[in-house]
Image 1: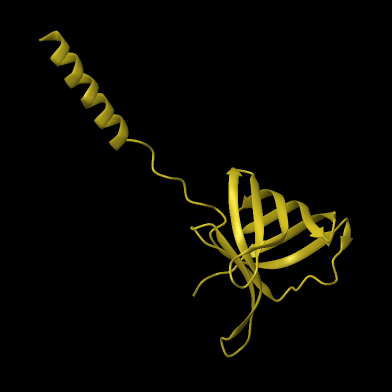
Image 2: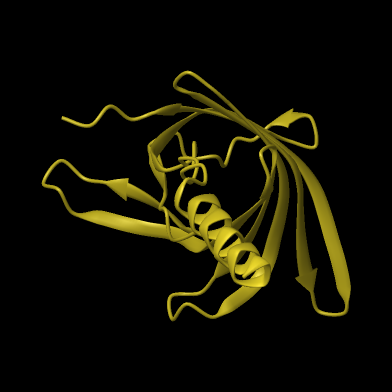
Length: 145
């Protein structure tokens, strides 16, 4: 009888433990962001498109687009991202077919209110060499209508 009571108690504890677990935290990156400023190796990046909108989805996909007045857009780049912890993101650029390309980033992420700060290193393969550069970007959340 003691063994059956112990097993029943263990099952009840497991049931309540699994059903009362904390809800999954919302990903603070999810949504659309517009670029405010970007530097590359400490120099203002003149090639950074300030008209781009970068979107992060809950299924760990990101893409950057430039929207036209008529609602059409140009896809600049896309990829997959992974939050290692609350402050570290790894992203892998993908080609138009969704296959990994030759560019990856490791960022420190800080989201405060509607501002996103990404800083870290991009690593690109070029023939037989690896190139790395330091990126420091500030974004603001796009308000949805």
